[in-house]
Each structure stands twice: as structure tokens, then as C-alpha cells.
Image 1 (cartoon, rainbow, N blue to C red):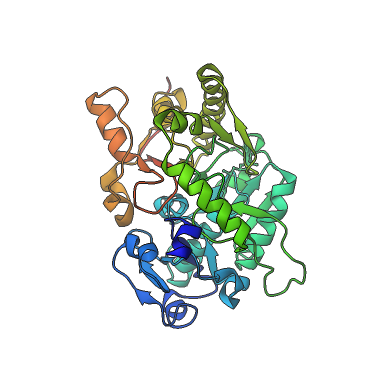
Image 2 (image 1 turned 60 degrees about the vertical axis):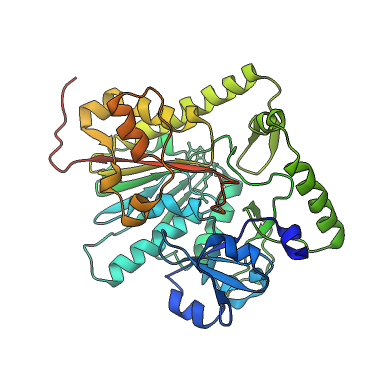
Length: 396
Ligand code: SAM
């Protein structure tokens, strides 16, 4: 009971990095002796070391947060990567097949390394060739983390990284990108879906097999023990108590907290200010998606945020679908029945905004997750856009 209080109700999500390892090897090695539980709730509600094999995302497990995975060789060698389940949705939904892939906003590299792992498996299975993954990151400091993460994950032979590169300045018509068929867009957002701002654990990037330096960059992820010092535990217990008592008004305030890419929080003091911030973010996100839709050979795009706000999520999707570029190039939403099996099965769908027949299709196509709904994941949103093979450019 004590460790549950100390760590909260979130399990630790662990993606097995199939570039360096296999699920079977990890189950027989790092997770040997773990009790296999059948529901996500049991991971945290049952004492001891528990493991739940995820039913939606391949090669993903949830384990008891008290297990110090960051001390294992598997973690240090990049065989496993700590990544929230919802954060695994975009690369899985993108399901890259033939051609090159772009990750437009890459750092710290969770989704880049996930794409690299999927691409690596496809190549190993002899499927139609994916040649390269281009990873762009505008922020030079965050680019360093990306580089480290890709190297540790063994993705450096697959991923070409452009550090300090603004995706909006990448020319879609450059011959370099002639074969880009799939793009993953995971831009800056309000971060309002991120779990437990105050008791957010610190995740350290591992040093990697060939590095002697201690990784310095930290990254928030729900559900793990960071420092196990008793004062921290006491602090968390106090905060948990306060959390439980939180009123609706407090929740509204929480939703006004904006978290930037480095985890810095800004409390937005009024509804008006929140709206202004969300509008600015949504405009940037909209422009970014439109830019992606211009790549000549592109057939599939995923758009994701760790935001709970409709403005940044379904709102952007609707604006994109009504845009000139979407109509000119034949882009439409990736319907639920077209999605990879795990995402089709995922029950939490988008928010309806107008109730029209088209709106219902879009809402069903959108994938959401909510923190604190018992599924053990962070608040997240992802939608896919597709362009059919025979879609011709139209003059509008
Ligand atoms: N996809 C990352 C992952 O899963 O690890 C997280 C991406 S984070 C939400 C957004 C990132 O986009 C930030 O690192 C930010 O610096 C970067 N970014 C913002 N605008 C950008 C742009 N115009 N071009 C490239 N990167 C951008």
C-alpha cells in the first residue's frame, strides 16, 4: 500500500525497442518472475512485480512503477524505452509502409525511435522498402537529446536528423523528399494532458552502451518513482490528498496550466488568456499540418497532441479538412475502419463539435485518451489523414 501511495495509480509503460531486442527476450530476461496480470488496474493494485501485456500497441507492457527499470541493463542499452501508452499511438497509427518517413517535431525522440523500430521490422520482414526517416527538430538544445536517444535506441542507421531545423522551412518540393509517403506531426501544444504536474516523475535518458557521461536531460512521463527519498514520498502523499479533494473549480484551473516542451509551467490566469494561448497554438498546429499535406508523394499523415483542448485537437482536424490544400490534393480523415487493428479497437474516440453526420465520422476517426479514467495513460489526441493513390491534384 505504501508504494502505491508513493507512486500513484499510474503504471510504468515500457516499449520494447525491437531494434535492439524482442518482447520475448525481455519477458524472459528483464521481466522474468513478474506476475502476469490481465488488467491494467491490477498492475498498480496488486503488491509485488506485475506486468500487463498491452492489448492495443504491439511490444508494449505496463509494469509496477516501483520496479527500478532505469537501473536495468535493458534500459541502459536501449532495449526498452519508457514511453506512455498514448504516446505510442502516433507511430503505430502511421504504420509506415513503402517510401520515406518524416518526423516533423522530433525531440526528445520517443516517436522517432518508435518509427525507426517499426521501419526496422518492416525491412527485416522483407516488406516493400522504407529507405529513410527524416527527423526535424527546431530547438538546438532539444536536438541534442534527440541525437542521444536515437543513438541509444540503435536508430542512427535509419534516422537522418536535422538539428535546429524548422519543419516549416523544409521545402516539400525538394528532390530530397520525393519519396516521402508518411509524415508524423507531434508539435508543441498546451501539454494539458500530461499527468500529475506536481508529482511528475523525472525520467533520465540512459547513458547508452558506449557513453560514459551521465545523461542530463529529463523528460516527464506519468507513473514512475523518480526519487524514492522519504521527503519526496511524504510530499507526494500530501499532494495526492489535495488532488483527491480537488474541486471542479480547481480542475478548471488545472486545465489552464500550459506546459511548454521543456516541462515549464505557466498558469494562465483568465479564460480570455487561455483562449488567446489556445488560438495561437491551434494556428501554429494548423499551419504545420497544411505544410505536411504539400509533400508530393505523401499518402498518410498523423497529427497528435498531449492536450485535452478541442481547439488544439478536433478543431485543427476540421480546419484542415476544410482547407484549400486538403481539397486540392484529395486529403481526408483516416476513418476508424482504415486504422491499424489496435487503434480501431481503442474505445476512446474524439469529441463531436457540431453533431452533423460528417462530424460524427471525424469524431469516430479521432483517437483520444484521458488521464485519470482508469486506463493508466496520459491525456492525448491523435488523428490520421490519408490521400488515396488515385487522388489527383484539382484546381480550386
Ligand atoms: N515527438 C516528440 C517525442 O515523441 O519525443 C515530442 C515533440 S514535442 C511535443 C514538440 C517538439 O517540436 C519540440 O521539441 C519543439 O522544439 C519542436 N518544434 C516546434 N516547432 C517546430 C518546428 N516548426 N519545426 C521543428 N520542430 C519544432
